[in-house]
Length: 117
Length: 231
Picture 1 (tube, chains in turn red, orange):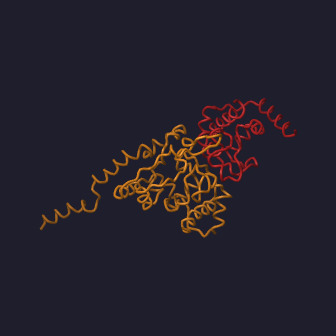
Picture 2 (tube, chains in turn green, yellow):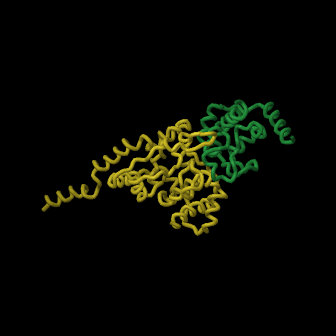
Picture 3 (cartoon, chains in turn orange, purple):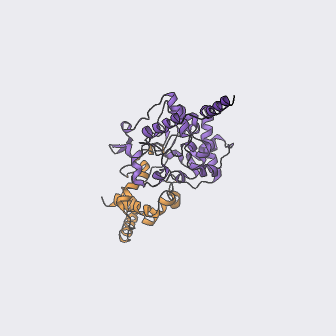
């Protein structure tokens, strides 16, 4: 129950916070290139690399899990890796590979993936 | 006598310089046979955006001479074995079956095998392609004495290279090139430089930079060397 309420609060917060103005279509291109190997072609966390991983990648299609992260947190974890938000160090930092604009596009796509389908 | 000396001097360059036609033949052959999958034009490659990454079928080769070991190239080209289990652009080779992502082996291209003479010529030519000398000169690697266990932990646990790379034939991630033969095929300075800053080598790389210090890089390069020495 507590978990549900927490998710609900985050969901309301996310819904009422102005979303980053990213290009979700371009974010999809970036997601396919950089993220699907671990997070899966469908974004469900079941990528080709997961078999021998000690921690399963996040399921980006789970509205509840994704509602628990603000856009700023998603930007932070993409740019600086899982350890930046006290999550798995298996999530690498993409700051050197992606521009700020590209990261914003990725976040826009993540929001579409989790919550608009 | 002067006439003989003159003739001898005229013939000397022919004897010590590879015949232009032979070298030119290899360059033309490589351009015709290899450029469809590999980038040889650095400036053209560096102008590409991420959208073009899905079209890439093999790694860029304009810095091949700073990347590979010539002996390995000459051997591998005669009997190529897959280095990247999921191809150069993994998403193009993934099938989702019953909700599970798998490598679509049938979609992967096999690298053509060359005969020994052609392989030697191509390897020799590739070694002349030395873009990014600056990165090699800046690379710092001296063979260290990292204990096996520590080196292995740096690879698998501390830096999570294992997420994308295999350090044995059936263990580890499959989206990146396998690394259990990396020491045999790659130059140490290249390995160190690429680990430290993959984007500097290839702006379309799918490998993230981990902001590793020189000591961490050394341990990882040591691990690749130790794996080769163990065989």
